[in-house]
Amino acid sequence: MFDHHLDFRSDTAAWPSAAMRAAMAEAPVGDDVFGEDPTVNRLQERIAEKLGKEAAVYVPSGSMANAIAARLHCDRDGEILMEAGSHVFHYEQASYAQLSGLAVRAVEGREGVLERARLEGLVRPDNTHFSRTQLLWLENTHNRAGGKVLPYDTLVDLCDWARERGLAIHMDGARLFNAVVATGVEAPKWTRHVDTVTVCFSKGLGAPIGSALVGTREAMAEARRHRKLLGGAMRQAGVIAAAALYALENNVERLAEDHANARRLADAIRSMPRLRLTAEAFDTNLVFFDVDPAWGTAAELSAALAERGPRMSPVGPRTLRAALHLDIRADDVGRAITILREVLDQGRPCR
Ligand SMILES: Cc1ncc(COP(=O)(O)O)c(C=O)c1O
Image (cartoon, rainbow, N blue to C red; front, side):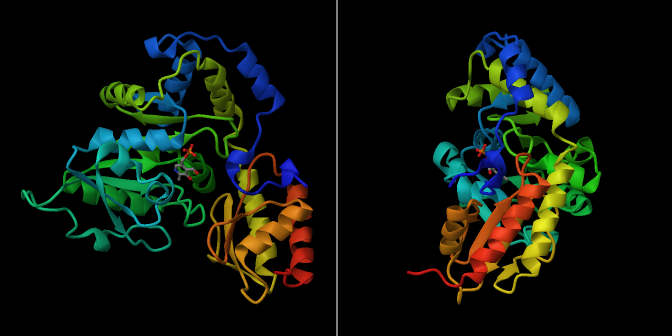
């Protein structure tokens, strides 16, 4: 049984609303390869302005924005420092290596948060034996760490550290607006410490497709070249950019509802003896939890739930992830909690 309103597998599972589709249908278009699509241009201006940067480039996906950022900041003998649980490290086929020949030094953080002390000494000296350490990569919010917000003071500290050592800084802010809404710290305050930012319209903001890379005018002119190389230059892309514009105008503040729904789901899970949250609290719209192996595996719980409606992703042998988004309303969360309890009470699945 597939119930779209119980699809917790990802916040990309939200469908474009009727109003969003109407905006897409009415969008003026042109050829964006020539920079002539008025809707794409408006979106790029709008997102750059919202993030307090000079310019933006519209791309099909967060993965492409990240791939472009890596090659933008690094030479072909470059190395990137990042937290070991970063999305780009785990889930984007090491695109920095495949597409740009770059190396990564993955540094274990505390609940996804890098610490200055662990970075000390990692910038390699200028020596023919070594790759060149050129980029610090941050992720905010941090997906695998449970949608954790990178604490603002830590961000400033890490960026100061990187600047003192001449590194460029990229922020994978696929869910930056979740951090903005969760903390009340405005987007430009986060972004002024970094050179480039990836931001996704297709996650909690509810657009069907699209992300942006944001930075200086000069860097974004270069990013357009990389986008073309990677096959991401699109033509009458205003049709989809209109959905992103609609999302930016209408779906940012409402992320607070997803956060409230995530807290409610987490509170219910905390009270279920067969389940254990992987963190004490979840800051934003993602909830991770472990299932008691005496009951079964994460895959088994995921399958048993899906039979009754709720879909949640197994992300490890014992661990599941539930993502909240704008098509999951408070009463859907209530339904999912009831089904989760019933499925666990039914006991271990047959194998
Ligand atoms: C933190 C983060 N960065 C980047 C991406 C990649 O985005 P996309 O799926 O649009 O390629 C994701 C996707 O979930 C993500 O969670």
